[in-house]
Image (cartoon, rainbow, N blue to C red; front, side):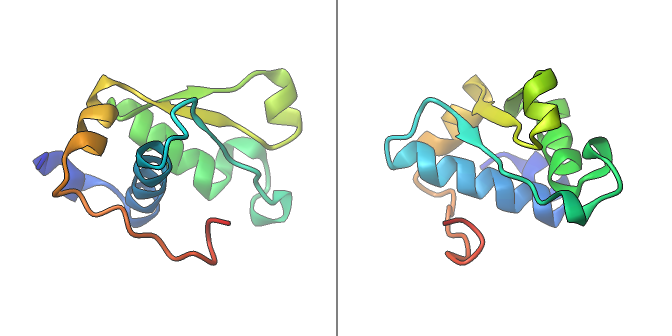
Length: 102
């Protein structure tokens, strides 16, 4: 298990677990995040965007965003090789609250 996981914020860890879970379930083309614009003053300060940037800075994911995804508050993200290795590690717990990730 990668010890850098302990340095992640709770939200970043939760989003990583969800991405690993969906990858394990066969959704290996990346994840889309539909953000509620009421949760932040602007796109870049949205808590999910901040957590995705945290994951990207540590090499777990690559964020896919362009002008349209920013305007629609819907970034995408893919696991990197490091993230996929985590997904293949059966010891990594991918449980997430189902009400958060429908």
